[in-house]
Length: 318
View 1 (spheres, rainbow, N blue to C red):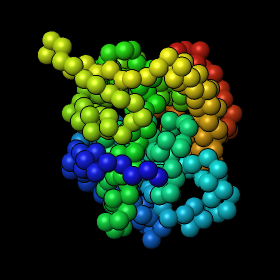
View 2: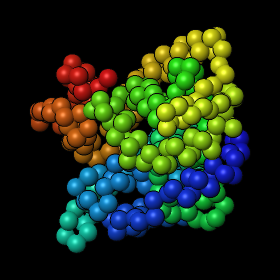
View 3: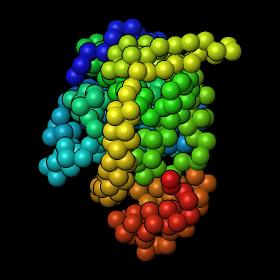
View 4: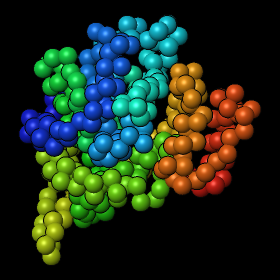
């Protein structure tokens, strides 16, 4: 993996959320009871990261492990984890009599490093880890540095892939909104149309600073000018590069839809209560409510196919 600039790594560390809800600490303990010394690090991210002590949501965690054979229950799960990372599992516990729910993804530290680099074609990992996240556990300082460096590399990869899609002059806000929109399209994700804007506004200082720190590391020359109190940027990108980038994103979007369906099908083998979770997630993010019959609840893979079709027809995914 390429080495990210130290100033970018420091900026990411400085902007990392400091206050971790007690519920997350409890979930971390539960994860250790399952995986023990295989755990190298744990990352807290997603909507609950910004929701404070709200226990009504579903906490999103990434569990970074030393290898898939040591972390998974059997060889089949380990192979699936290696072929199409990550494996996703469900976890719930009680905190002061209230149920706490979490979805955690099992990913090797090596795949985190590969998935955030420019060697990784699809946006699944670098689109997630370029956003604010809290590293709530690492086994040592070396691993902590590797994780934050991977986050920094994700920012560089994201920006490098998005720049050719922008107009001649743009703001950092336009950079992130365009990129988030494209990465959402490259997955099967039920989101409201204003999701990207709300995500940016929630952490605008982070997105502004890490983008500026990353500009020197992307393969294009970027210049800035002041215009009516705001800063406009431009990148030296020729017409051919812009054309190829549009083709590349078309391929990435098609590939992403296929991978998303495969991940959902794989999740049906590991995610207890998966159908109920998917319905809850769809309604929470898109406002589209879908009823699921008892028959579909008993057949999760069939349910995934039917729900996907219904969701598409009702405009819950774009």
